[in-house]
Length: 561
Image 1 (cartoon, rainbow, N blue to C red):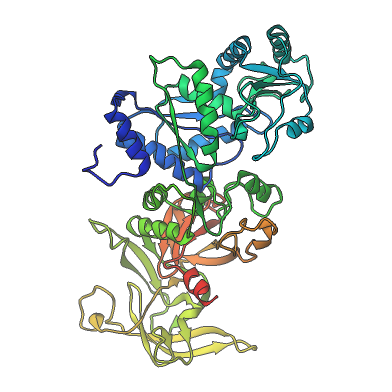
Image 2: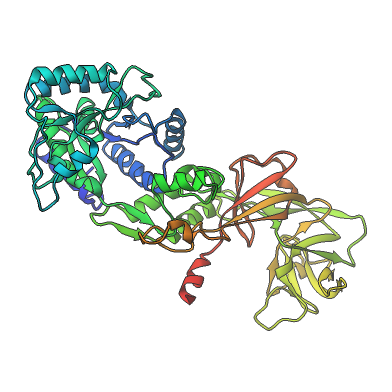
């Protein structure tokens, strides 16, 4: 990789500078360090693309390390989901690691800290600790237990490990400086007592390391060269380095922590706590609800992995936090699906169309192209008959000159089929149209080469043959939140902005080629949008999720507001 190949972001510039200053390229190693206490979301997707993308660009290994230091909130389910998400995005880690792999080494180092006078057991309550911590403008005060003897600290710490004390009785703190300008350096906690079953180590441990203690030392043990994290960890960097100072051997690679800005997405929340709240309070059907900002939710909705990777590449890496409009993500989804999906016909708001001069009982199988974007064009057969479904919105009895679909007395082309002319309608007792009657030009079949087939008419509409149509449940998804920054106001509960119209379930009709469609298969329903098969689908009942429309309709709504 060189500056001649592409413009480098500031993290790549840091790496390039380190290489120039003597870091061997074969010492480069990156990591993605999720905590298995929930499902990954779109923010994690950006971090995944960053770290694994660097691994690809520099042909360097990337570790997947689970920060499993809080067994009270962590589960194997989350570990499995995270691995699935990363693989689905198209990345492969070099080594699968866990902070719990290093529990013994971390403990041994902590013992050495105590022996070196760099750590002590504190027995204050959390309230007492908060009081003596001080404020950003006022120095803290030393714990009354700060000067315990090495022997007493070692005894208490071992008994903490052995499970002799209840939760909250004691903690192990690093002994740094209670008047430090950075409050994180004021004797930070290294270990707390936690009698909780761990998904990997079982009941082996009754004490667990804090993130700040475990993270940098895990990076060091794995010989991670660059530890990239989001801006909220900038104040933690000083502590990260202090902990490394105590164990660092200058014959090894010293990890370097650097920070980049979160890329927040409009009309979403990405806090795991808030996402969990949505799940537990049943505002959504689960972590993989297609309205959720989770990777599993985006996958179920039909977002292609390459669209998410392209989105991450488009928004890039920044030093300042900013709000990215979700329409940019939707644009990337549309752009990718336009290249890869087959065009099929479906009718979601049907009205019956009868071609009065079409022979009774006759059917034809017409040729339809699958995707005009394909390098080598492929085709499928679609059935045509006397009675069809068309979209109710594609017909008006009377219309102005700007309406180019079907009206009485005007012609339109049925996609891949014939030119028809509206003749009359049948209505029910309430005046609703139940049938549209039309005639067709028998020589106008698309692709037949006849003079009539080449006639120009202003509109083309899609359709489905009623005798061949497959009924399907179609879930029309919209943005889960109506406000662009639902959790931006601390005085207003983010759930107040839940969009009551974020899901509409309707019955539609699709062409018979979709009968064998499988979970996550993606299609463009012509003139309607992109849809994918949901996991609830079965041979007896097809279920489709709307992935995204053919164009950004929210832009018009928001410009009016």
